[in-house]
Length: 259
Ligand code: PEP
Image (cartoon, rainbow, N blue to C red; front, side, top):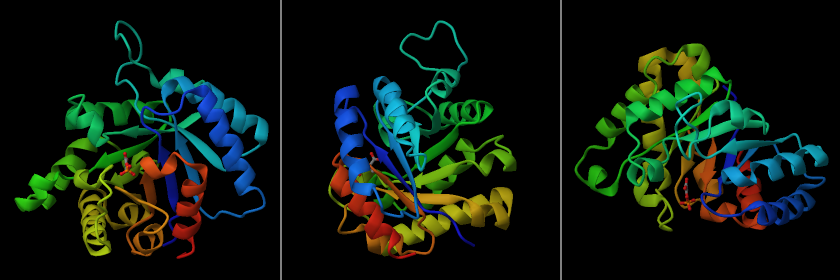
């Protein structure tokens, strides 16, 4: 089963339009002539989406897809500060990161809210990058599997098999995000295989074998290759190390040499 690896840059609340322009110009100049075998996604803050869309459109860099870092579960109306899926579509957004641990822990998003957002995103044909992962306390209390099971089951509630085909799961142990501590390849592979088994329980083995499961949590150029060599890891969601064009590129090139 060939699953095309997907490397997504989550810039979080970094890079307004002018820094986005600097990054893209530098990144594109470095990728020229390279044949990258992965799907590349960049998720800037909302305000930088128009600039990113313009730059990619004008450069013909169709292999790079645009993601939003969030979307509303509602269509329109009195939801101050929110952005709808149809607004995102106007800026050629194809992916949307949902369920990130920072959205869960800082902004109180529950599995039910995340599920509503996933279903709303699919209505607009946006592809969710659906993040799940346990805290250190949960792992140490032996709750890894039960936490992942709840997140996967509740997050994908009433999501059809057809829609699942356009969803990417990102397994991100919370204790590895932005900490410089990466899961070992054994820990990552074990969790990914377990998540795939959960998808198989819900949808059967064929959709489970097809779904891409990214790893996220302090991925860097020097650990990308060993993580990506794990059989159930299909790319990475990258925060800090995606802010520099060179390190993002090295993660992609090192991570795809294992293919
Ligand atoms: C993330 O925020 O999704 C992430 C994985 O961050 P970092 O790479 O900085 O750990």
